[in-house]
Image 1 (cartoon, rainbow, N blue to C red):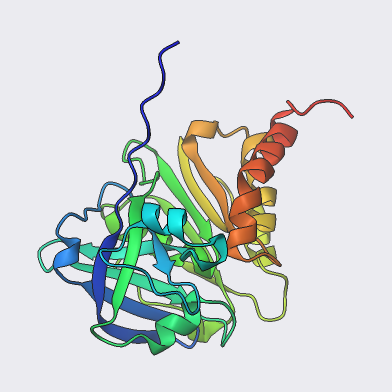
Image 2: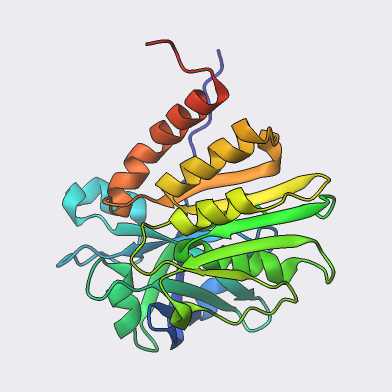
Length: 281
């Protein structure tokens, strides 16, 4: 058997903070730019994402920045901490990359950084990745998510032609978290209040009278409600797997490190259970 070629190390992009903006009480926008984005490209997917490399506390990395060298020479606890964020917008002409961050006060790593980020500050990241864009051949589209999926849903809506048949449901904590989206689609904003995350989304989709024709769906956000809606779409309504983009961006009670470590196995188990291919107990 021929040996597989070694995977080429991914080279991080380097950019600088251009400006920041508070969009809502719990959403902060950071716009990045600079010559380090000369090789960056995004646009084929509306769920493009980048993986920001936050320096570990107290770590000073050699220049030029080299992830392979850092992993070889630094203890694991001093490796950069990775956080994943959707590309809200990419302007190749002005070479500006827009990222939106959900804020949880002083909790977490990326949110507090976004609140205090200053113009000129350097940011390194990997990407973009991505896998979804609304299929123009579909008869209608279903877009469902919480705050974490809002940037991707907004991009999808803005990419669709006028007159496209779309049902879009976005759950946020309250009316102050609604955002203006440049689309003629009327988004259904669901205000969570004190209810469990995603409960209102599951109710709304279950109550929806599904139009005739082929559906292309995007359902992302907290893993528990995503699991429920995947069961509805795949098992209850028999929507083909290839017409669904369904995944948990995050899981309640887990930071990204813990969730990413378990996500692949969790998704495989849920798919096996819902497809009826899980081994008998």
